[in-house]
Image 1 (cartoon, rainbow over the protein chains, first blue to last red):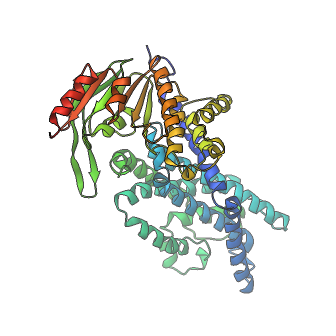
Image 2 (spheres, rainbow over the protein chains, first blue to last red):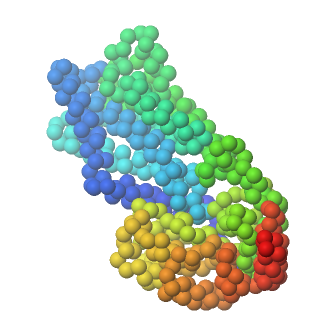
Image 3 (tube, rainbow over the protein chains, first blue to last red):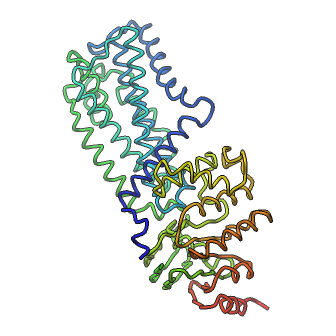
Length: 264
Length: 222
């Protein structure tokens, strides 16, 4: 019978599709526009340099007991990982519309693959930044490597979850796109990326600790040095819970609504 | 064999549900039988082809493909505009489960068939509609499907390409079948034995495609 000929299991089809999409997205991300790959790296470098100049002028040599450079590099790499993953995932469906002609490719595949690619790229970018900073004499040896890795995975998972929700959300309610674009700056301000959480007075500090992004970034900084002092409420598992919740909601929205909205 | 079981389809619009395009279609298309789908504009021909090809899902009912079915070839569909012809080809080879070492050979045969020369390495957005047709046709033929789905696939090519496509189609019929739509009666009768006439959301099966055409013509205003 024809069923046997060239039969592939659903899992196999999914994996080959993910691989094909990953390579396709990687080529697009690194080659679209003039020297796109340079800008991928240059953006965080410029952000870090800019913040560094300001903080040096203010004579801030250490933040919460660790070197300002270490504090900034960790914060901005994590913030960029979050922003890029969520934003790339959010736009995955509209950017890959042509590919849904092939029944092997589902919208959720493109969202997952884009998030994976951003995570991978940010590991590479982070390593290059750390190598560069170490070369200039800064100490980037983490005290607790596993916590650092955990914080990285958690913030990525949170961005993936929010990206999954947003990718469907903007198709169902197009106005969401404008709100998300606006929300970027406030989120940046309340995530402790450029403003030290420990410098914020109570009761506001406690309020900021409801933001799961803060827990990941501060945990990562704490993983760099035991001397780093941060909020006493710090708990990385809070980020994990929020992330898993968002991923669950995002996947549910995809399985429930995607067929209805993505063909519009 | 493709089993279409009580398939309904309506689309989502900005103002809720659209009207029913297909209202309960049940048809079994046997293996090695080429079928032409006939109907006026908006009768749901392309919708039915997209459902058979798995590009879209039915609102109600189900479709079972017990053979390897191609994606629906139609004008401009399925090509990523900012990728080159080669990159598009590579992507398709990968999602159809080819091993990395098999890909170069397959891409060479696609490039050979399309005859678009250096444009194969240019982004698809720079292609003319004829060049897109050539690429799409070459891509579909590169894989061994049991059933090929064509939604007016050859309409945009020039005379030379149409001849080539026709020869390729003829060769195909020996090992596979085609499910197609076309407004040209000649094309349909040349390639298809059976016909499906879509009318008011219902499908009518005819063992001879000529009878399907006759039924379709009777409903046209004189």
